[in-house]
Amino acid sequence: MDKPVLRADARRNRAKVLAAAEEAFAVDGLAVPLDEIARIAGVGAGTVYRHFPSKEALFQAVVLDRIEQFAQEARVLLGADDPGEAFFDFFRRVVKQASLNRALCDALAETTGLGFKAGAGTDFRAALQALLMRAQAAGAVREDIDGDDLRALIAGCLAAERYSPESRYLVRVVVDGLRKAS
Image (cartoon, rainbow, N blue to C red):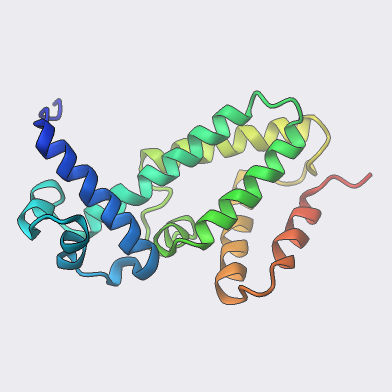
C-alpha cells in the first residue's frame, strides 16, 4: 500500500521534527522526552505524534536516515581510484561521526536493536561489504576480514571512542590492523 502524500506544511513539520529529533537524540539518545523534541522543532506534541506513533519510531526514522546516508556514501566510494584509501577514510569517518551522536552510536553498536535490522541497515551492510571487498581485491585490506568482522570492529571502535574519548589512537590501531601486511 502506498504512503499517503503529505501536504506541503505537513512535510515541513515532519522535516522540522526529524531535524529536532536528530539534534536531541545525538545528545541524549532515547532519554529525551517527545515534548522536548516538539519544543525544539517549534511544533506541538500532537504534530510529533501524528507523524511518529512513538518515540522509538521517531528514533528509528532518524537513525535509519543517517545510516542510509552512510550507505549512499559507501556506494559512491565504490568508484574511487584508490579503493584502499576510500575504504579506510570511510571507516574512520563512520566511527568519528557516529561517536559524536549517541543515537547513531547505539544503533551501529546494535545496543538498541534498531541499527542493522531494517532496510537502511541492510543497505549499509551491503555497501560496506562491497567497499571492503574492493579494498581487499586491491590488496589494501587483509583477506581474513569479512563484513561481520568489520561490523564488530566498528562497534568496538565506537565503544573505545565513547569510553576513552582522549584515546584517539585506538581507531588508528584498528585501521592499521586491517591493513594487509606488506
